[in-house]
Image 1 (cartoon, rainbow, N blue to C red):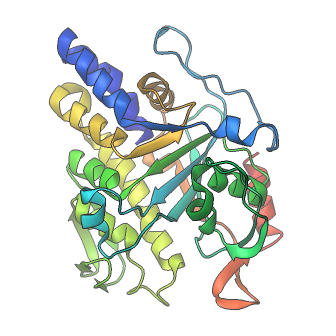
Image 2: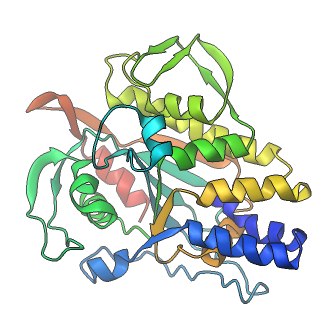
Length: 332
């Protein structure tokens, strides 16, 4: 998604002046912004390096090359007809069942994606609420309750509290946005090591390589009941495969020579997208995407936060120390 957004402005140039103006307005208004910096104030880990944003009004300015940490969440919200149809069930509210800290190295040609299991027991800090007041500190609660209780602001504060790493940016994608992006790219190729027969995610695949459309790719990202012990940990491996598959498909797709398809990808990449206010305009998002032009799928490392079964609950996990601490320290 980050790289797809970087192609948006180039695509607008070949769509024609009037069409480009509408396209830019439409894509810009797809994005929802949350002012996380103002909400959290100064009670946060220090930034490792300055990370100035590229300005859309100054295309000749050098692109930023500093390291970045981005919290990427997948929301299971059923709001809207498309999300309800894809999610199924009658769930209310929203949870962050997919959580990844994306660390982009200085130079922005390599990255590490760290998945945080949703079942991780953490101390959830006090978080400000948009309605006023704040949540209470809670100990030994599931990681994904932070988003459920306090939205993006509490999710960011909880991740920063657990890791000691400043999140420079925040990105959230819902069911519909993810499926649309996969479809706009023409699907993705994913290899599964075992049969998948999961009625809850509505996915049935034999082991092997499959070309998945958006609906089936989303089902794969949600599958867990037919994997191992049915926990979130098996699902994480599939989600990480999908991240690399998306990057590989993006590299194979000649978007710059197909303006119509480029627009569909850009529209999909921004639909259902929520970001911090540092990325909530098309210019800012496109600048980030252009700065990642040298990042390829083979330069992305995927890992899971080191974990242990929680002593208090065999269905939960806790960070395994000192390995988890060393991992987070490497991202600062």
